[in-house]
Amino acid sequence: MAFVTTKEMFKKAYEGGYAVGAFNVNNMEIIQGITEACQDQKAPLILQVSAGARKYAKQSYLVHLVEAAMEETGIDICLHLDHGDSFELCKSCIDGGFTSVMIDASSKPYEENIELTKKVVEYAHDKGVVVEAELGRLAGIEDAVVVAAGDAAFTDPDQVQDFVGRTGVDSLAIAIGTSHGAYKFKGEAKLRLDILQKVQDKLPGFPIVLHGASSVMPEYVAMCNQYGGNLGGAQGCPEDMLREAARLAVCKINIDTDLRLAMTASIRKYFVEHPEHFDPRQYLGPARDAIKEVVTHKLIHVLGCAGQA
Image 1 (tube, rainbow, N blue to C red):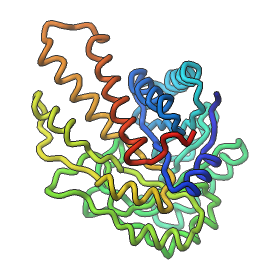
Image 2 (image 1 turned 180 degrees about the horizontal axis):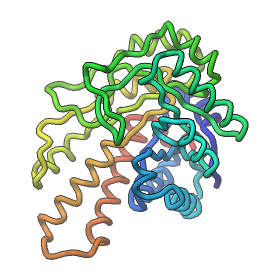
Image 3 (image 1 turned 30 degrees about the vertical axis):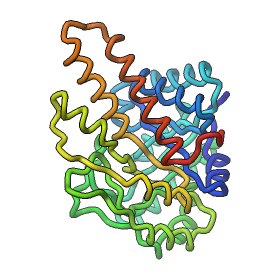
Image 4 (image 1 turned 90 degrees about the vertical axis):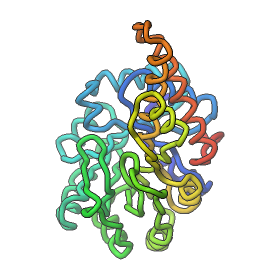
């Protein structure tokens, strides 16, 4: 087992019509739940760390926890920086053992996005690390990434060839209607698969990434609400549309909100049913099981990558 890049993962995913799950991690229980599910399902795996997770858990702790998970499960893992917003942050992760980084300069003017992305690519490639970048902007909130609905923008398919050609980036995150966090409106998000198809036509064989792609599983929303939450009818991306995107050019689908909801719902339920307990192992154990259940569902029914490791 070893830290690996996404190069071979994405090549197989594109050819096989499935996507690899990229799951955000913040602590030991989340890492264990995810890796145990991927071990059971023989699925390829990307674990990703946001800037917020680095600040919360410290990079060295997370790297060593992932190393322990590889030793325990015997699986290869790509360790990825999610939404890096500066060259310095990307460099720190590359130097610290990450095998993949995302430089997210999508909030900047187009030429500045290209300039910063190219700088990260040159440094990363010299170290054998792959780079993801983003064109277009997703609405929603994820750690320090906050984009109001009015500032969101779909990816322009006419820009993708130029952007990839001038930056040398290895994969591209696009905006086609997904959103960070849980949707708080009536009706589900509708993905612009027509934009995805145009991007695929412009970049045949090139790996595309979807951020903000949690489906916000209703059973966990309901559980959160039942045990003291206030999520209302929060919804996410329809799983059938995500599966269709995976059959096209999407090789990586990011999942974070569904993990948070499952963990929080499990812990809320435990404390309501066992108010006298105070041992963290008693409530974090079921939370870890909930994470594993969610990831198993995603591997089989959404990503289509079970059995592809």
